[in-house]
Image (tube, rainbow, N blue to C red; front, side, top):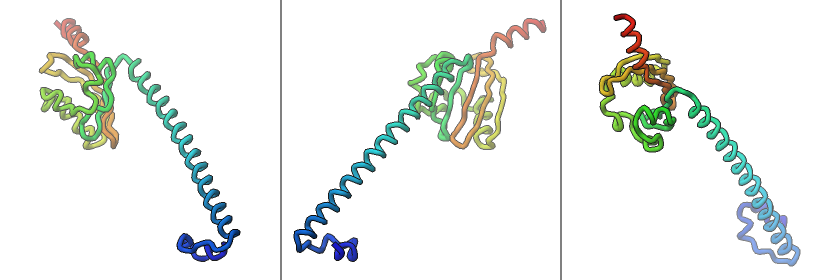
Length: 173
């Protein structure tokens, strides 16, 4: 046993020569195996618990984002949708899940060079909040956008304000 301790990590090269050395080698191997199994079980439980916590947090976040009256989307730094709530899907005329992972400007090329396009790029590049009210000519609708940047991408809350704009215009006339 002492020979194996002194010569680690090459103990496997030494062959136990006495019954006691054989017994100790087996006991050590069994102890290591049991320790590894215990560690694996502890890690698997920790991963399982953390996964459950993350799923609960995801469901809570989704519940909040689905309950708000604003449309909401999040984009990653590559301009791909990472979240689209039902209200946004309704305004887009699409099912939210069909947009996930898709590039915003590939899905809505009519948005390129519109005020929102420039605002999104500015918010991302300069990491500044932008509150924008603008007319989206391809859809003949007015929208108000609140654009929140992060290093991971953008979070955008928006809603159609066409009726409000039309009412203001009618009151002016």
